[in-house]
Image (cartoon, rainbow, N blue to C red; front, side, top):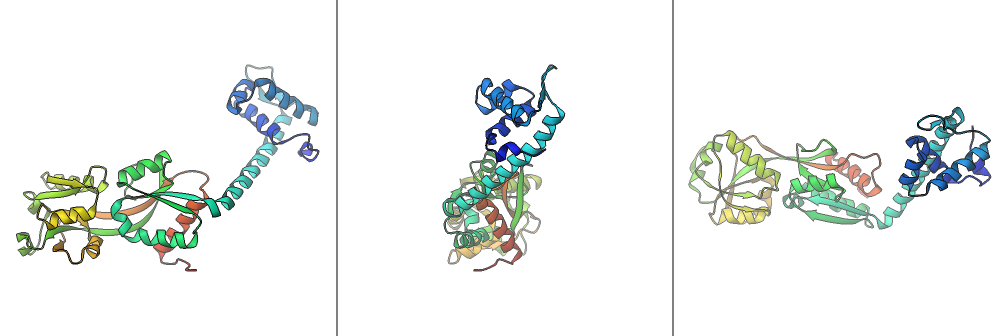
Length: 309
């Protein structure tokens, strides 16, 4: 069966949408409610289709309406047309986003100083008309916001809490003990995690995953760290360590940003926790242009194969 009525302009896309809604919901009433129209409007649309094709589309004899053979044939064709229309709408949206798109990305404060800042810079260079809206919050808050849809994507510390997110590994590095340059523990040949049980600690706040991971590692070693200060800023944590307020554990890459400070980054012999960063986004059938391009560029840069232009 072909949609000859479409060619004559007597059957429009609304007829097909209303017909598919009734077929899927087996109810004129439910279809009207889902489409926010009156039931007589739905009924008239179905009558128009049946008159146009000179067939009966629904069997109304049972407790719920069912498609006839002709109705099932039209249902398949109508779905193909509606899917094609949705593809057109997505394509047009992509074109609009080339000039007016927005990408909302969540980044924990520390990751903005690492490898991901290079990815965002390359992204802006390739797509200068897409506005980047950056939100700096802890990885837990980033993951939650991506789940809720208030962020399109974000950088988090893996593994993820939610199974409803897709992820792409971006960066992995070791964590180091950070001590003031005159700390007596620096005289030791090696430092183990249990050696730190009597130290005062400066840590990230609870909304940072590193807070939980470090706390769990200390508990596994048989002690709870004595926290004297919590912060959301890695540079403030480092300053507090430099001022002898306490010790801290930070990603080793932070060392490059702290040249000139009286700090020492030291490995902990039995501390095997890694800082694994991943780019996450919601699992969904359609990804907007701005997000698809970020994922593609991130994969290229992680693989070292970005196309510079």
